[in-house]
Every structure is written in structure tokens, then in C-alpha cells.
Amino acid sequence: MAREFKRTDRVADQIQRDLAMLIQREIKDPRLGMVTLSYVKVSKDLGYADTYVTVMPLGNQDEATVTPESLAVLNNAAGFLRKELARGIKLRVMPQLRFHYDESVDRGRRLHSLIEQAYQQEQKRSDSEE
Image (cartoon, rainbow, N blue to C red; front, top):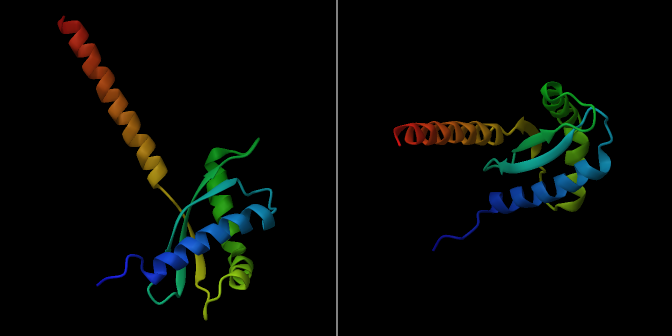
């Protein structure tokens, strides 16, 4: 009988919850936008935790530069964040954190706009045929 949740999934969920709190409370870099952790994928050997994030600009930040800057801030703080995570999560080895931009949100927006355009074109075509 297979277990419902793999250990790596449980570890990933805990890392995601704890990491979200740590980033919000501990990272005070002005280059960091509003970061949302989409998901965390932990390797089978628990060596790495690939963390996928989306970033919204704050205040006067430029949307084009905030994502690369935020990723740089997070990757630079990865050692500190890993150490802080290790305090709360009891693992023999805490996975190394790697931050990546989650492109699924942009892909979803693009698909939504394409569907919307196709729908509007179909509406125009059906209106002109009547």
C-alpha cells in the first residue's frame, strides 16, 4: 500500500510555510518586491529545495527589474534563510535553497488574453452575420 504523501512533499510544504514567514519578517532589502512562494520542490535526496516565486512590484518599483533583483536578493540570502529554516525544521540535512521565477502566472495571463481575444473575434463575427 502506497503512502498518500511522500516525505519530500511534506518537507516541501513545511519549507514553503516557514520560508514565507521568514522572507516576510527577516528580509528587509528595499529591492525585494512582494514575493509569493508558488511552490517548493525538494529533491529525493533532500539536497536541494527549488523554490518558485512570483514577484509584484511595490510602490515605485519597475516591474521589469523587480523580478531579477528580487531573485538576486533571495539567492544571496539563501544561506541565512537555510540556517533559519534549520532551527525550526528538524532534518539531518537542510536542503540548499534555489530560487526561480515561476512563469506559470505569466503563461496563464497570456492564455487568458488569447482566449479573450478569440472570444471577442467570434462575437464580432456572429454579430456581423446577423
